[in-house]
Image (cartoon, rainbow, N blue to C red; front, side):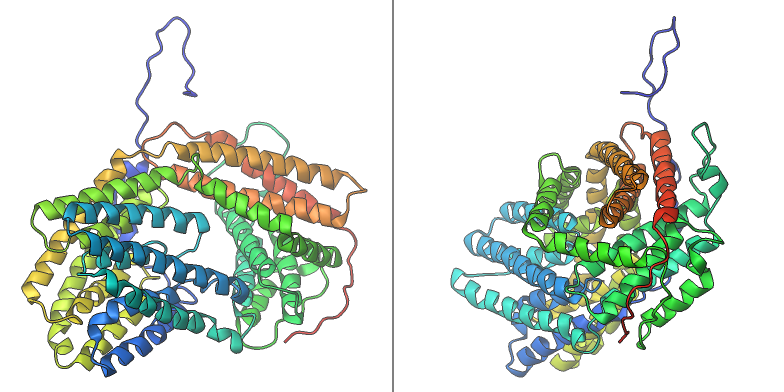
Length: 597
């Protein structure tokens, strides 16, 4: 229903919603602007090179480079899971390998049973939609569903016989097993590396929040009308700190049993949380000192011992609460709750469903249009369309610009390096490995920059099965890119996502419940420390989810009005409640000394 009041005595006229600034402007500059590279850009880049080099060179040695598409399907699994602790990464990458093999099996069986282009495109679009939903629901993270769609769509249009499928899947699983080993190999050198990086990010975000906490006097005021600036840097810093602290806690909770290093990291998270929930001078006995937090972050990120901070108020209770929460997550009921949450994200009422419909329709239209125009490789258009669909329409528009520019520039790079790649098979393999590394090294700066390297790599893979006319490859790629991007984005604009606002309302209700529970535990002097900690962390998690839902809905173009006032009020109230928990943590506790690594 509309929130616009109707003046008495006049007929109600439903006004068209005002277009957001994202629709009115559509400025390309922000979408194409380069950012700082990720602090771990080299990890997926090196992993995919190592995971690919061994199968590539093995096939080169036996003269079967035509099989490289099947080993590449497994090797590309090394791109996933680099932000996860190793215990969780082992399960995640194993799931990626099995999911890749399952999707490839569907593609190979379909290709062996039919040569109908219409059927192949339909199966490719359906696979792309399913892979999009599964990757978003499991939050496997970058590169998400695009790698799955790239491999499975290409396999759909490769000649295949049923008798070849077991051998080809064995190559994929073998290369995937090696990629799994590559992804977990750093654990032999630095077992707590992912946890250290997550905690360092939390400390850095807390330092920014402590240095500029925003207008606390206004947020701490009682109820009543307030002016709230959505672009307030302090508000952004608090949200960023909440997300970073929540991510660090989740990383520690899923990393396995406590070790001396993890215990020190947990203490650092306690200090980061203290700076986030109660930023400003004079609180936390120096825990909110930005310079100290930054110094801890630098030492935590480094290779030396983890810093051992002084006890913060409630440190012993906090550590006990983390242990208790870890035990709950490991218990049978905790695992069941995680499975129920995953099923809710995949259920009929999931906010991911409109994005899946966009992916299905956009990929199908792109493939059919390219096939109707006589383009020989419609799967390129399918992959282009599938790569566009992000959390909302604004981000999808940005990705459309990035993908189009990157692919067109990448075609020029391919034309320049093609003579070098044809010197020898070894030169061709080395070019593929180089562009695989370059893609991961550049893509964190901006997606279009990474696409400049991805495009020649994808075109060079075709050369592994035999030389093709350069003009044909370049022409098909340009046509597929333009048509895939235009058709895919058109489908995104036609398929509206009105569930985005519903997700915000659900997140608002969850935040209200979490805030009420936290206020009850804070006001109850008999509440156990673990109960207070769990309530505060539940409130932090709900605020992170609320901000994510709000940002997603704000980027959708056609939907009912957002409850912006309620959203801002819920965030302010939630942060006030978090701040109120800080003085009630109890006296400074001197936890037993635990050494660092």
